[in-house]
Image 1 (cartoon, rainbow, N blue to C red):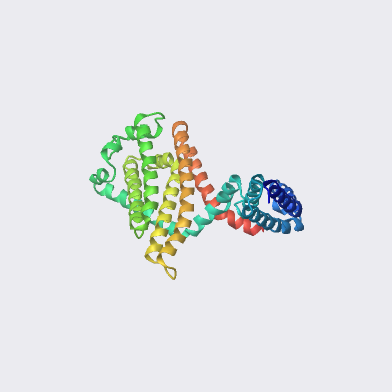
Image 2: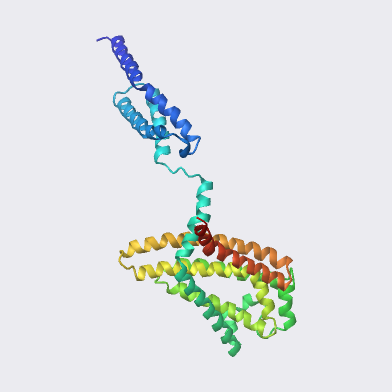
Length: 338
């Protein structure tokens, strides 16, 4: 057989192949283009049923085209068509905006609600640590330096005058105030991250960090309360503190969930229990980062511009109410309406 005769046979095979199957390719491409431009629920039942059938037909055509070494342009066309079909039928069809919406509307609140036991334990540990720090400094001033390093105290210690402590709370751009506020925010971010990251060690580091954070809070309150400025300090901290401390509590709860799941896996294998707890805790921790960013904005703006105790407590109370409603009440209202 001559070369020209062989080429004629190939061309006839290609033409026959196209004649038999090209209508299906065209239908699949047209239907796929329409499906990519509209939500699935707007497609008809026949269109939804046709998509996987036409996709399998295109895959079969691609297999034949590759095996028989047909026209390279045809093989490339079928590969691109099958790839589009695969991503539409089996790929993640949710866009970035929808995934972010799902996180804030469902995933994050659900994870926080799932951690309710650990959250209450973390609240209790914070309260115990605060009372312990307050009592220790009240009983012996030396405990203040043991809890809060002198290099970061910036002169705020049990021997500081009421005027100096008050200037910190209402000094606006005061250098001491800026340094101390930055220390508090940095300290709380570090505690939140460590309380989560070290939770795998049977939750003990998370428990100790939450207790220590409470001790810092209690020690600070004691020196202000001793000068009659406890209420004023509470307002100064409330603007960002209700968000910041709540975030630390949740981070501690996430760390404790991982640690207790490893220590007490129940009926699941230890690694499976840790993996399940890790997914919930990680979701909660992503949200904790969001809360800390909010706290940083509130601290940066409120500390400089708001000096009214009433306004400070109002903002702090409103933020705490907002977080509680978002995590725990929104689901109840939504279910009640459904």
